[in-house]
Length: 226
Image (cartoon, rainbow, N blue to C red; front, side, top):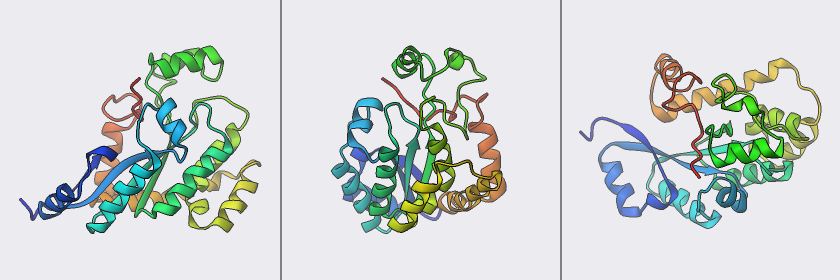
């Protein structure tokens, strides 16, 4: 079956040099790992993902060393996340220099400790447990002082990723209302996702409809399990 190319998601602690060599022989051309945030303490304490920055750097380096395409999964809009924390994520992504970076808003699973705590702290609507509130894709779900900056950075994430100079410019302009045309910045991301998964745009759209919309329960949440 080595003539059938494939990609897969994996976790930071599951990757080894021998495994990657075997996967490449089997036809794998890319792996995706969940970096989530550039702040180690947020990753461990808020997301319950016990992976250090050094472990992520090591895994990313191994994937690239074996000639495989690398995608990083990242999140914005975490509880207790500051604007500085979000830009720390950008800087870590820049340092890793992956082939593709997917930035999404954290959408915690209803009725978990994260959602219950956020409701008590007043940064998440009590109605979040309803299907209509959970799983939103293009807006942050948590309410805090820097909500505008969080939403704007989502659209300008890849611009800030390109250089430290552009990062400083983006950091300045996200404080202000941005025109709706900024949403077109998502189009290059869709192209890179298609390239990574080696599928047609139509196949990607069908996959989105079947797995990502809030009414479908297979892939609509960035998984958080306490």
